[in-house]
Length: 179
Image (cartoon, rainbow, N blue to C red):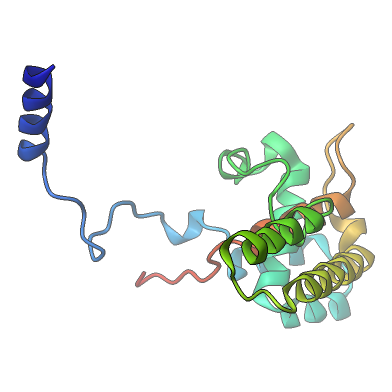
């Protein structure tokens, strides 16, 4: 056993040092990313009314990307972003998603009980965020459901919007050529 430990330590000592925060490990071309520009290009082509196109351009980046991600998920394997979408959890684990709010409140409660963390007011804030999320889903669904793709036998556009909002809310959404 001692010899195995020594061999493992020798391997580790010859292993290159960990990456620094400044090192670029992976570069994704901007045109392959889900960006505001890509979202406007793709979604505007689906809209026929100029008023709706202008309204789309006024959407916050997060909401615009939510609508695009919902549409692309609905396209399934026909989406240019499918390889990425397929890596995302089918049931995202965020407090904004249906069925997760109580789990998040339970975790917060155990933080207070078991760790002594001051979580006063957190359950109410989580509830407010979940309610706001549902209002956003309803509004985006009302305005864009008719243009969004939906796979045969799959969830409807509203479910795709809810799923997308959860994913967009938990990821970085700013991309620029210099980064």
